[in-house]
Image 1 (cartoon, rainbow, N blue to C red):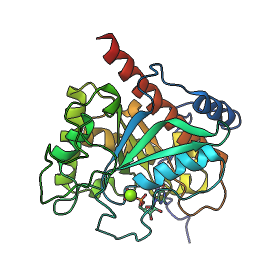
Image 2: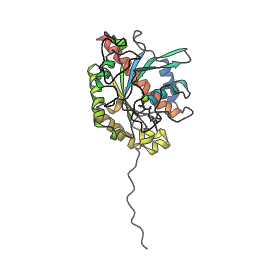
Image 3: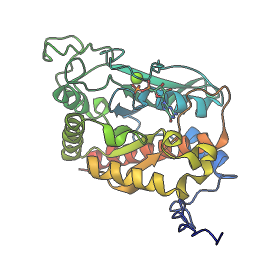
Image 4: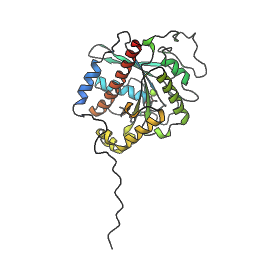
Length: 290
Ligand SMILES: Nc1nc2c(ncn2[C@@H]2O[C@H](COP(=O)(O)OP(=O)(O)O)[C@@H](O)[C@H]2O)c(=O)[nH]1
Ligand SMILES: [Mg+2]
């Protein structure tokens, strides 16, 4: 028997050098300090308001929980993450605002997350409702009714919102593993919200979740995230879908089944949070200047 014809080696799945630099051994503490010490530049706009939007199951609640875990240094479950994977129902249509407790200071961190139910053709929040939220018309506890348009008579409707009532950063949450499968109508709605935010000057970022599900190398070792070709490719896909530049996309792995916190997971979460806070703060300062 002669030698077997060898098939060409598979193309490498990693880049030689990471496309974003991170120091996995040192950045954790620095990031924690930066975020913990963060104070909005404008005392009248405290807390900064961050809106999470995206399809049901994208990992919005898990992202908030992950921020909470990274800042508390322990696992806690604040927002109810949906544990059923093929769930096609939203948990709630209530506009819920989440704060993170700052144990050291005995108070709350100067930002909030608004976690709304995913937009869904039948039962979710409509694009127009989200735009009202961006502009600051909707207070905490507002119950969205998909069958009934928002009315100015509702006690939770703010007729004349000011800068502090608005959303200061819009965060689109997309899952890396199934981004290709998200239905076109959902993407169209998300784009519409994003474009509206852009017209209002509100900064926008994408949190790309479930990097562990998208790339086995990353699942095995999260520190490989910025050298994985698969992850880069998924980020480009997210960028094209929503029209958000790649440098405003933060890939993360959320805490979802862990019992303890992990420095690498924390670093990615805190880095994303730090950037979101800086964008939100810049927006507020620009609005005051103009
Ligand atoms: N493997 C993995 N699963 C995740 C991640 N983020 C969220 N999940 C899971 O995805 C499901 C939906 O997450 P959830 O936060 O409820 O999504 P939401 O509907 O956008 O709030 C849950 O089962 C989570 O445990 C992640 O980064 N990696
Ligand atoms: Mg949720």
